Image (cartoon, rainbow, N blue to C red; front, side):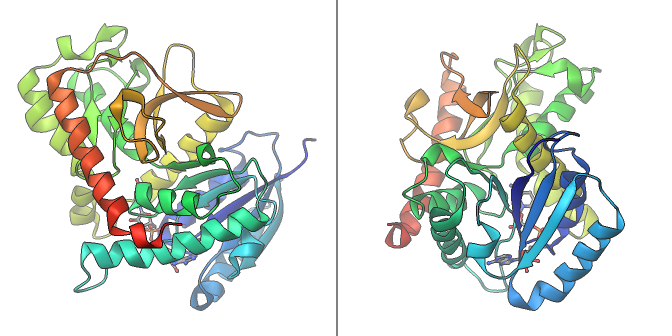
Length: 326
Ligand code: NAI
């Protein structure tokens, strides 16, 4: 039996977590032979609801679930944590400007960054799901100076998965036949889903579709999918977001398949001319628990313009919270 790993989930009584925790505990994220200790963080008023979730986790009798810690203290939640999924965030309230939203979240993610800096495992792998995910990840990273910035990521895997299905449906294929998909930039409406290097059953996607469908339908559909779900369901995506979080962490821990890559918001090292230090979504491969940006992809003018637009948005978000960044 492997040694248990500690998995922290914030916003653990929320709707994404309700679809997420049971899959982590079942082994879907880290494998059927990896015991886990769940360290669940919530705000104080949600601790009763969290207790109910913990009771349900108990009632599943998951063999891999060794212990559940429920707390409203970030230092307790991140203590010796190996994996952290930061789902809890402040939603946009009535009359709240974008800047207010950024600031409210900056307060949450700076406190959590500091707590990780103090108490987490030095190898912690952090995934930020709570929006604005890329900038929240940047804030946590900057507040955890003793941790490697490469440990901090943001989720664009849901956008990646959405793109796989949209393209598979258009080409009469299936999502497992689609490889080398890329989401560039911010998890927002400026994100750029790029099909120029994508393959469907080994054939270049751009040769199977029309430019018009790509530019006028595919890209906006992926960019606006979150809003379309809210309109249809009356609530934001939860099960698909949880599924993407599972995928992101599993790929990071266990690796990308040979000949394929995934999309992750990661610390930019300046690859493809993207400003260093932004948490920007790139095509990445994962091996042995580490990630690397795929190098050498050709970028045409169409792609460059879209990559720059989403980079500019991320730089603006960073600048809006600059006074809160150490
Ligand atoms: P929710 O409102 O159901 O749950 C959020 C939970 O976070 C609540 O239980 C709340 O009490 C908790 N929370 C708030 N502040 C906290 C703090 N400081 N510490 C710990 N917990 C805290 O929201 P839901 O639907 O679960 O979504 C969570 C976040 O994920 C939202 O920001 C949403 O926009 C984002 N999201 C991101 C996606 C992505 O692809 N990156 C996709 C879908 C949603």
